[in-house]
Figure 1 (cartoon, one colour):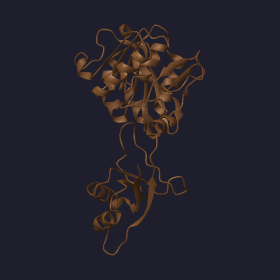
Figure 2 (cartoon, rainbow, N blue to C red):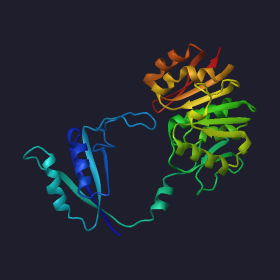
Figure 3 (cartoon, helix red, strand yellow):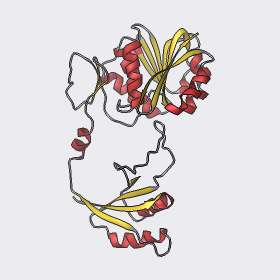
Figure 4 (cartoon, rainbow, N blue to C red):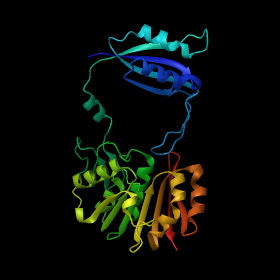
Length: 305
C-alpha cells in the first residue's frame, strides 16, 4: 500500500490552524516540525521531559499523511482559506511505500552503553557484552528508555555511587529503568512512584523481564503512599527523581522527608539555567552540588544533613 505525504511550509501563526484543518480533511496524521532543521537557521525549542515547550517554530513545516486515493487538490482548496487573502500555500508531495514498520522502528533503537559495566539493550538485540549488567528495555508508553540525557545522567550516578544493600525510591519512575538499574547494582529494595498508572504497569513488566526479585520492588501511584509522606517510618538511603523542575521544587519537603540523615538525593529533568533555583530550594535539607551536565541538562545531588 502507498501513502501520500502533503508537506506545507508555513509560520508559527498559522501552523496549528492548518494542522487542525488537515485532520478535518481526512489526514491520518499531522506533524509540525522546523522547516530549517539541520541547517544554520535551525531554531532550538527547549522543553522538559514529557512536556512540550508550547512554542512552534518561526518557519514551520507541516507533514500530513493521506491515503493514496485522497483528492489532494481538494484538500488544498479547502485548507487554503486559513491563509491570508491572496497568499498561496507553499507545498510539495512525497510518496511513502509499504514497509516493515516494526523492523524499521526497531532499527532506530540500538544498545546504549552507560558505563564500562552497564548497558541498555532492546529485547530484539543481542547484548554487546553478555558479562555486563544489561537492562533489557523496549521503547514503550512510559518515559525512560535510556536515550534521554537525564536518564543517562541518573544511571551514571547510580553506577558510580550506589552502595550495595541500600534502599531507594525512584520518584517519577516512568519505565522503571532507574529502579531496575538500582536493583541490578545491588540495592536491597526499591520503590517506584509515578502518577501514571501505565507507567506503573510498564515498570512492573520491565522489572520481571529483567528477572528482578518481586520481593525487592514495588511500583505504586502517589495515593498508595502513606499520607503526604513517601516513607515516614523507614527513610531510605537514596531518592532519585528525574521529573520536571517545577514538580521537583514543589515536592522538595516530601522528598527530603523520605531520605535518612546522611542519605543522598539525585535530581534531574533540570535545564542548566534552572539548576541554581532548584539547588536553593533543596539547600534547606541537603548540601547540594551540580555533578554533571549533558546536552544542556543537569544532574544535581545532595547529602542530607
